[in-house]
Length: 276
Ligand code: SF4
Ligand code: SF4
Image 1: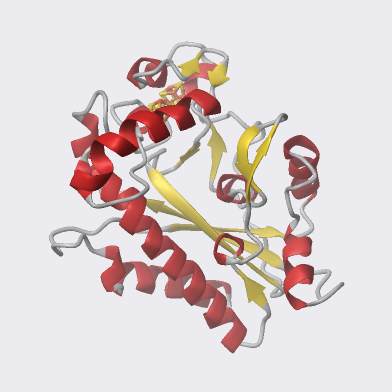
Image 2: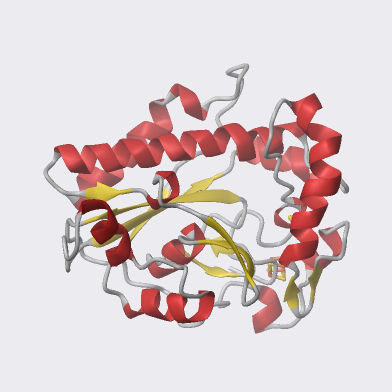
């Protein structure tokens, strides 16, 4: 089943019309990376302790959808969708607002990502395994907590870290083998699949700042100083998006969630693990 699932994800990325720009000139995402984590990986409990009570464990998602103690075994299937290099190049040239191509990936590309989650969840269900995609579930919630600021009750980046796909970064994103410019998605299933072996020990292994103290390129890319050597200020970042970016571009670009991503482009980790 593991190979079948990977092929199903790849086929959807390669053939779905939703993965094409509105004018059909380019694809939003190229070859996906796919990883697997046990729903009982102790990391998920550690996430709950750090993020807060509102964070739901993989077992919580299965139980809340299919009944208490539905499954004590299963897998979190996580994927990373690397953004088309031509799109990345357009955002690299920007210094204040995201390019229209980048915003379209954030808005329409994310719709494709959600469609992929629905597709894989249904594929598994039809194969006889109860499955749920948290980000398209009615139980998914955006949360603001004193502890971690803007958050939600499921984190795609944390799922990807657990599934061996990459490590966190100074700007609060995830650096993968294909870089930091991507979108992530996931499905939780009762199907047991051998977990991916994580090729890292620490949560910041791939970020130069934490390993050599020499990079910090993302700090200079942020127009509102939301990144410092101490980390990422989510409130400043969120506020810039809401009060500056959205009013400036939403109508022109024809989106409601434009993203920003300046700190994910024209940086050494843009398309690969920096230093490797
Ligand atoms: S630009 Fe440098 S400091 Fe910022 S996330 Fe990438 S590797 Fe880390
Ligand atoms: S996404 Fe946020 S942190 Fe990154 S450059 Fe934009 S405003 Fe700054």
